[in-house]
Each structure stands twice: as structure tokens, then as C-alpha cells.
Amino acid sequence: MKHAFILVLITFCFQLKGYAGNFDQYFDKKSLRIDFILSGNAEFQTASLLQLRQEPTWGGPVKNLIDQFYYGGYYVNIYDPKSNQLIYSRGFNTLFEEWRSTEQAQSETQAWTNSVSVPFPKSTVVLDITARNKENMQFESILKMNIDPTSIFIDRGKLTDHPITQIQYKGDSADKIDLVFLGEGYTDQEQEKFIADAKRFTESLFKTPPFAAYQDDFNVSAVSLISEESGTDFSGKGIFKHTALNAGFYTFGVDRYLTTPDMKSIRDAVWNVPCDAIFILVNTETYGGGGMYNFYAIGSADNARTIEVFVHEFGHSFGGLADEYFSSEVAYDEEYYNLNHEPWEPNITTLVDFNSKWKDMLPTNTPVPTPLEKPFSDKIGVFEGAGYMSKGIYRPADHCMMRDLVPFCPVCSRAIVRMIHFLSDREY
Image (cartoon, rainbow, N blue to C red; front, top):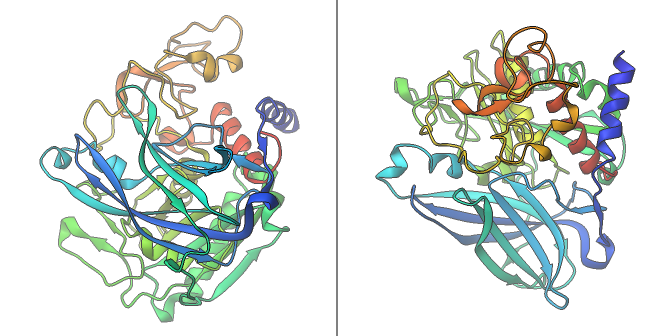
């Protein structure tokens, strides 16, 4: 039965076709890191360049250069100025985007530092960072400029060489997904604990379907960062620690929401490590975590439900999956999703364009919406309540890792497998 399920997932993976670009024509196997600032409030946002850096490794795909998932609130696009051809793109989310949906953003204007990396261009390219307009779900340009790779204004200097432990190596980065664990709140005396924690999390990930069937597609490493103090911030309790990545609970006032706004420190830590996905292990027993698509995920190392939270948050950051719960406390206003449009996440729907979601996976004669009663409640359906909203938005299963930390449902599993195929340079 297990093998049959995996075969179904693989079949669906090959229904989506990736774009095979000419990497060697346009890029070197190094990274161009783009640090930029997003500023604004609930009504508007702008972007401005902070710095450009050349870094020595590229861990992303070299065939699947164009991201056709259309996930995320932002896109980074690279164009050849001679032909105006799109030669690289990738969607992502930011913590600033979430902040704009909070009550605080109604009365304050703030600026947040962000960072993305693209393959290093061989000649001048056009950078275009776009943001999704929630009113129509279309992308609009917020930062567009030419980048000359020979410019003297690109920082080419070395940063701190942190100790790197290879937990698992399965092959060349171009064909593998490079997962990097970062340690937060581990002092010099706690570095052995960090490595042990990273190994424990790695083992747990590959015991979890669908990742269990794809362990050979991942390289895993751990970057040891020394914090001056052990633990993390609890701003709601007046506790602040001097740590490497400035993480803390009470993000947007929610006690369990653990994040860091300090993208610069994160990117500085992985400057010389091939990196497709980042998970920040925080040295605390307190329950909590967070995850933003193609940005980072973060979670506590020692809570009783640590592993489930890790996999849940990794579902956000790696698979682009939405939260499916709708009754827990969140900081966002009640209109986080526009019910007049289809959300971009693959595991929730407003039924505006259900054909683009999991309609093809519904058992025969399943009513849409689907009542939470036998014989439908234990199968794939269209159940009301998801994305922090109890009405007007629907999830594919009654229970799932993205709702209540039980195994991923088949819809979420399919989305994860598609991402594995994309990042490991296969058809997806």
C-alpha cells in the first residue's frame, strides 16, 4: 500500500513540467546575494537595495531555473536585457508581509531587512523583485534595476567561517536539496548539543512521509553559531538574550510564534554553504516555531512536540503549505485571505478556481463542499475551515500536519514531492 501511494505521488509530479534553462550560458556556480529593505504599512510597501554580495557556492537547481509554482507573496526575477528573456525566478514569503496584516501596521510604518540569493550572472542582468497584490493576486514590480557582475559595488569579501558539520551527503548540490540547520541560543559549551539536536531532527524528518521516501535527494549540514547567552527572547515576559540570530517568541504579540527578523545574520551564517532550505534550531524547551516559504523555518529544540512542530514549519518553508487551522490565536486580521480569489497555497481553496488545486484527487461522488461526516470525513474532501478562517476557505482533510500535527494528508504530500522534484532538477 505504501509503495502504491508513492507511485501515485510520482505520477502526479510528472504532470507539471519545469523549464530547463541554459545555466552555463547565463550564470556561474556562485551566488549573488541581494539584501534589500521592505518598508511600509498596511496600505503600501516599497523596496530599496541595501547591498549586493558575491558568495562562493550555488546550491539551487541548474536546470529548473524558472519557478512555475507561483507560490509566495514575492518573486525575484532575473532577465537577460538583450533578449528580455526571463532566465531565473523564484517565489518567496517574508515576515514583513505577515506584519502588514497585523493591527500594528494600521498605525505604524516600519522597515524590515530581507535577503534573497540567485545564481551569479556572467554579464549584466535585470533584477525585478515583485510583490503580490492581495486585491487581485497579481504581481507588481517594487524594485527593478540593472546589475553588472563586474561592479566594484558588489561585496566580494569573506565572512566568518563557522564550523560546518556534514550530517548527510548524497551527491552534487545541483542534483540534491541542501538543507542547512543553524543553531540559535547555543553557547560555546553547548555546540555538541546543537550537533546532536540537528542529527536528531534529520533522522526524524526522514522517518516522516513523504520525506521518508526521498532521503537520498537531500544533503544535510549543520552550521555552528556561538551565542553569548543560552536560550532566546521572550519579549512578552521581559526576557531578552544576546544570541547569534536575534530570535524570539511573541512575534506580533503571539506567545508561541517564534521567529527572527534578522535575515542578514542568517544569510551571513550560510554565505559559504550550498543552501536550498534553512531550519533554525532554537535552544529552548518552550513550544513554538514559525516558517515562511523559501525563506526559513524555525523551531524550539527540546519541547515534547518539537519534532511535529519542525515538520509542520518545514511544510511552510519548503512546500509552500498553508496553515489549515482556523480556531487558534493569530495576530492577523480576519481578512488575511481574499475570498474573492484563489489563494496561492496548494492545500487550501476558496473554490474560486478549485480545478487548480486537488479536485483531481477527490474520490468519486465526493460533494463539494464536503460534510464532516461518514463516509467522507476520513477521505480527501473539501472541508470548510482553514487559513485562520472558519468560513469561506477549505482544506483537503479533516486532520493533517498543517492543522493538528498529525501525518501529512495526500494533498500536502503531493505538494512536497513536487517541490523535491523541482529542487533536485527533475521534472515536476
